[in-house]
Image 1 (cartoon, rainbow, N blue to C red):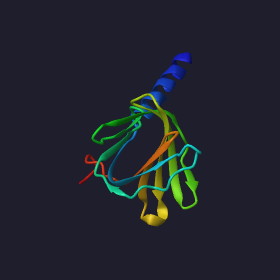
Image 2: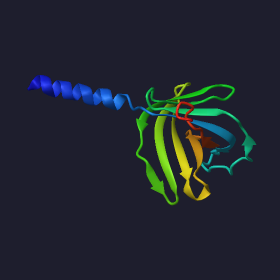
Image 3: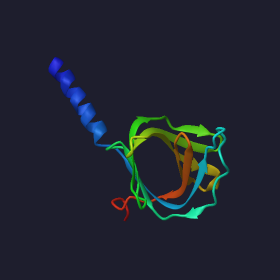
Image 4: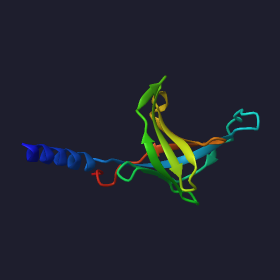
Amino acid sequence: MKIFKYLLLLLFFASTSSYAQKYRFKTSSFMVSNKDKKGNWSDWSKDQKSEMIVTLDMENHRIVVYSEVIQLFSIVKYGEQETKGDDDVVTFNCVDNNGLECVLSIYTRKKQGNRNQLYITYQDMIIAYNMVLEEDPLTKK
């Protein structure tokens, strides 16, 4: 009976790990907001054109922004998907490639044609990327 339980447990973990998901986004622009010495956030900067790839790799627990200097975020904790007003939000507690803690949030703006935005929030700065989900080339027909 114990062997059966261990076999069942092994099969469960094998099946859940094989379904780890990968998402690929393409950015179109970004904005930045900084915190001043009084703790107030600045207005958002003007949209700046940006054509980069962003990957959410749940199998390897990381998010990568392929900018001129690659931004690698190791996911420490996965948040739950929430609905905030008209938006769906998924949050990830991360550590970047410099060892700094940050929070990454992916918003799906339902009233804006399901537009996606990635917010990278540090203690003193927020970067917001406008992006679209790219179709997985393996599933295209």
